Length: 321
Image (cartoon, rainbow, N blue to C red; front, side, top):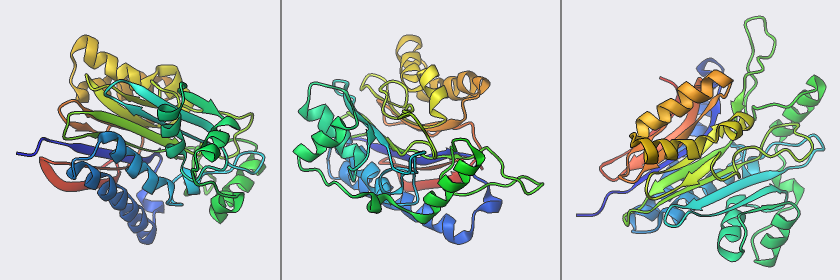
């Protein structure tokens, strides 16, 4: 009998209103999530590692302009892109991350390069791009990362004089004015492979109109990304400043390790009881040592997908209900 394995992924969380989602756009998001899930799950089904599976799933999402990572990264205040990513191996808690990368086509590959080819954990720009170049990773000019709707969002954010958490669709209130609650764009994946190993990966373009080389929780091990075979693997999406302050990913692992809580209970406490009261909106995907999956969020929706070997039908959803 084949040992159990599981994969879960996300493409962002926040205020995702069905009323403002066209059928065509919803179908496009669903298809992209299905493709990323299929790609990563195939690695696991073939006996591959959790590390390879999460990297493959995130690669697919980075290459899709619908999501705020890789090719779909949002613009900074200065009109370029600064991308963050992290990956972690639950076998030995090895980890690698990059922050502010500007040219790497797939930041998650650069993060894995940091983990496997250096003695470091987190490299910032310009070093992150330099390492990628030295090891032959694909680099792209600024034009590769340009999408018109991302550029239009930057112009709107500049006029408003603030950063935006959203990257995909404008929300409007009943009066017709724009609602500042937005979809938070980050992609990520977690997995348990047939050998019982866990892994997590996260990638993001950050916030539209961000300044001063702002870095969120995604590349910070223990905040937005974490994996330990003894407990769980976690990839977060949401307002990064709050996830950083709460050390969300590691906190869930600690509740499981020190209080022997289940994955579902630990996630509930952190996402709903600890994070939400301080204003931390968002969610995460998680898998534990037994292959159980959790997809908690405290926002209106989260682009999410999962599949396990004991329940082979893929699950893909966007809204809360």
